[in-house]
Each structure stands twice: as C-alpha cells, then as structure tokens.
Image 1: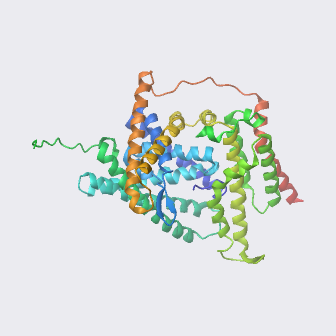
Image 2: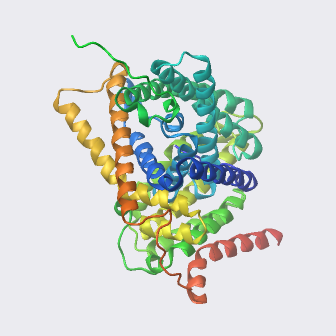
Image 3: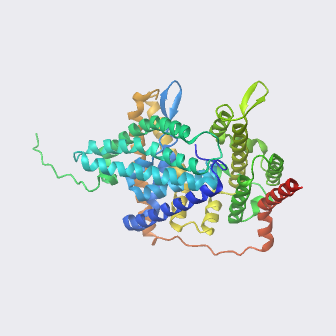
Amino acid sequence: MHIPDGFIDVQTSAIFAGLAAAGVATALKGARTQLDEKTAPLAGLTAVFIFAVQMLNFPVAAGTSGHLLGGALAAVLVGPWAATLALAVVLIMQGFLFADGGLTAIGLNVFNMGVIGVWAGYGIFLVLRKILPKNKSSISLAAAIGGLLSVPAAAVGFTIQYAMGATATFSVSTVLGAMVGTHILIGIGEAFITGLTVSAVLASRSDLVYGWKNNVQKLEIRSAH
Amino acid sequence: MGERLYLHRHSLVHSLPSHLKIIAAIAFILIIVSTPITQWGAFIAYILWLLTVVFIAKIPFSLLFKRSLIEIPFIFFAILMPFFGTGEKIQVGPFDLYREGLIAGSGIVAKGTLGVMTAIILSTSTTAREILRGLERLRLPVLMVQIASFMLRYVNVVNDEMERMKVARESRGFEATGVKHWKVLATAAGALFIRSYERGERVHLSMLSRGYEGVLPHEEQIEHKATVWLKAMMYPLVAATIFIAQLLIEKM
C-alpha cells in the first residue's frame, strides 16, 4: 500500500521527487564504486527477490497475515547502495505496472521506503554491529533491530510529507501517532522475519551477506575422531 | 509479469510511442491533482474523458474496475475522514458528518481513482518492456533501466522458484498457521535470496563472456512527427481545456 496521486499536494511531491532523485543518484555512484559492472545483474536480482518476498505471506492470527517490506533486509544482504536502487526500481515498477502508488507520488514513496527505510535500517545495523560481540548471531540481531526501526522511520517520513502538504483533514499529531503506532507493530514482524532470514543466509552462505563480509572466520582445525 | 498486465489490442492508444504516453499520463494526473475538489463539475468531465480514452483503447471496463481495487486501503482512509474531524457538521442521510472531512475525503477518492485508472490505461496498452524503453528515452539513468529490465526478465523465474519451494513445503505436510511458523518461512526467504543472488552471479558471468562492459546496446532513436505528439498529448490537453473552462465558468 503506497501513497496514491492527490494525497499529498504537487509542491511537496515535487520537493520529495527531487530528494528521492538525489538519493538514487548517490546510490548509483556508491553502487558503481562498490560493485562496478556487477551492479545491474545483482541489484536487478535483489529487486526481483524483494518483489517476490513481498508476496510471501506470514500468518499472524485469525486469518490475517503480513508481508516483509525488505528495506533493512536488502541493505544488510547486498549493501545500502544496491538496496536503495533495488527498492526504487521495485516502487517505480509497482507504480507504472500495477498502479500501486501514484505516478506523481513515486518520489514520495521512493523517499520513504528506498531512502529512509533502507538507510535508517542500515544505520542502526552499523551502530549495533559495532557494539555487539563479533559473531553471526549479533549480525542477525542487529539486522532484526534495524528492520524493527526502519519501518516506523519510513512512517515518520510519510508524516513529514503529510505535515508539509496533506490534502486530508486529520491533524498531524493524530497521523503521527497512528502511523508510528501501527508501524511499530508492523516493525516487530519485520524484525523477526529480517533476523531469521539473515541468520538463514548466514548459516549456508555467509559470504553473500554484505553486513558480515569483512569477518572472515579463521580456519578451524579439529582432530578427526 | 508485465506481459500478463498488457492487453493486446489494435487501437490508437496502443500504437502511440511509450515515452509520449508516459508524459501524457503524468501531465493528466498533474492537472487532476491541481483541481480543487469543490469544482466537482470538472471532475465529472475528467472521468467521462478518461472513460472515453478507455473505450478508444478497447480496454474492457470490467478489467479497469477490477484492477482499480488496489486503491481500496486509501479509500478506507478517506471514508473515515468525514466521521473524525473538527469544525462544521452537516447532515447527510442518517449521518452527522464533518464538512471539511467530507470534502477532503471525496477529493482523495476522486483524484486517487483518476490517477490509478490513468496508470491502468498506460500499463494495459503498453508492454512492460515498452514502458521501460519509454522511461529510458525520458532519461531515467541507464543503470536503473538495466536493473528494471533484469527485474522484468527474472521476476517470473524467481516467482516460480518460490512456488516450487511452497509446493515442496506443503507436500511435506507443512501449513503456515501462525507466528510459530515464521522460522520456516524466513528460512525459505533466505534460500530464495541465495538462489536469486546465485542466479544474478551466473547471469553476470554469462554477460561478461558475451562482451558486456556495463552498457547494453542501444537501438536507434526514432523521431516522432508533430501529429503523433499531438495525438498523445490529447489526453492532458482535453483535461487542461476542462480545467480552464471550469475557471471561466466560475468567473462569470
């Protein structure tokens, strides 16, 4: 569920389209230095992965279910640059092909989920990785908490846009309370799924996890009996 | 994915170049969202014009409405608005509604619906690959276009992969009913990531072996005649005419 056309006024949409474009441009630069000509296939397949995993339903209770948003997960798995690009592409394609999110609101959506969601999640992950002991379970834990907070952070982004150019009549404080409240609940689900998914990837191919890459484990020699 | 959304027909709308259609769609939506909702006469004219274009594009109305259902969550939000608010109240049927909330709510529904339907006309009359080519002509960075084309090319492959994993889980008697099953599903998501990533690596290596250096070969640019431009721009131009006419009527 993304912001549709006409929900936020044209001026604010234009400002955030500019900010989102700047964020994507920075990510393009960052990805080129980090991945060079590998960027397109890897960020492309990450976009596919996010798109697919958003369709994987996680049952909550009584017939309701939720799905992953994936900003923090993508950032931890492939790095924040490629994650921003992948999410931006997913959102642009959702707007143009599925009419999910307005065409004039793409900038707003990319800014909230592709820039704030990814970077808030990744920033928290980096801080926690520094503090926590250097092992695989702390990577999963840091990713989980990054996932937890990335979702309400994106909701705060939405609230700022709402405060700047809403066409609706709910007061900003009501929207802030409702958005952050519900998104903390969503964030709890995001945290569990992000943490569990990262630990699943760490268990079988830890070399693929960007947030773990520099920690090469020493070769362990065990006696054979 | 994109191919399932596209509806093959021979119509004027289908035949127009995609980048012009994208410009037209965005211009149309910008005019719509700039119109105050209190000018409800203009909105009736907009929707009639939109439905005319749907008819010209030979898109079945049932398909249009079915695909419009995606905006239901926001309609729900808009419906709540007249009930919770402040200020002047008016009586509508059995309900006591807030005037401001009612106006803002109907504005969100009207503008959102016109926006969604415009995007549906675009994606139903243009293949996903053409939309991408249109975005490329409109200067979307080449790398973004490439990422998006990988996404389009592999989305079915990865979805099938996910479907196979689901069949495998279910054939072993697994049924996800609650939070306690999240670990299994998250492991599946992790496996899906590894398979997607490894496919990305494989694709990258096969591209390198075919001489890829970071850019894809370009097709030559075609210049479009003014008449083609004009035909494509009819969509926003009629809306602009409605907008101006409404302003003039108001002045009188």
